[in-house]
Image (cartoon, rainbow, N blue to C red; front, side, top):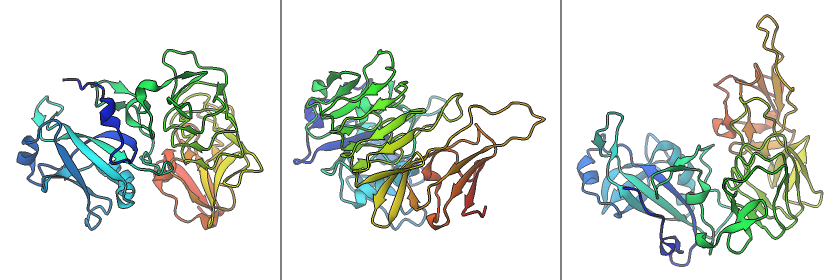
Length: 371
């Protein structure tokens, strides 16, 4: 049965701590761990516990799921990798069973419980959505498919019933947070974020189709994937913006015709962020973190198989000491060969730095002139 939208009371703070994030997840491994019987005894609405298992020999990020101290299984590895840090940092959670079984490809019910995980935290800058680029998710409330903002992210004292349209965007009841885009509205030529807005929620303006964006002087934070799929924008970042999550402007449309990275200019009075040759970087005590990489891509690549391909170079700015999650939108499917030129002090570059493509998927990484 489709699940009704949550009651406002269900979204209320937990012991005064605001609900920040909610996500549907499957519990895996019941058969392997002999826990199928325990899973089948579950009922919708049962609360289960998430337990970190940092000593797990196979995965130091492992998160065990229990009911009354009895093992049910584990969260999938990609979610554990994203959420382990939150649990280790003391972020509070509540986990509720949506249903104890799911149907497999041959329409058999199997003991793979579906749960709804809620995270409660006071710190707004904690990036609970750092899971790499996620496609639209199945909505745990009504059984349909939807983009994450409508049902997966909430903010302090935000009554979803009070959200309303303000200009080009949907805002929270207090008009301080952009939470989404109006349905069935034509994409604006330029997406204007209203004055007074302080933050852009995760995924809020993803796939907007706009040709650019204007950010207000009141803006303070832009969360991960807030402007996912933005293409070719000139983004002027005001002095008051103190936090832009890595991957806020990530894209997986790099294989599509006409996509271009965004070019960033940061107000010189901003002490938290800076730009270098169009790339956006965050300042830290130990150097610079790459938040969004810019590259001047050619307008097109020839399709004559008899001619050699020039490929394309993505250059990580000098002085960069680390690369944030999904900071690099690069696809070898667009231009081949694709080369990523990285300064030598950068160190290890993980696959999580890419929103699409990775060093083992056709992207050649050149470390300070050495491949």
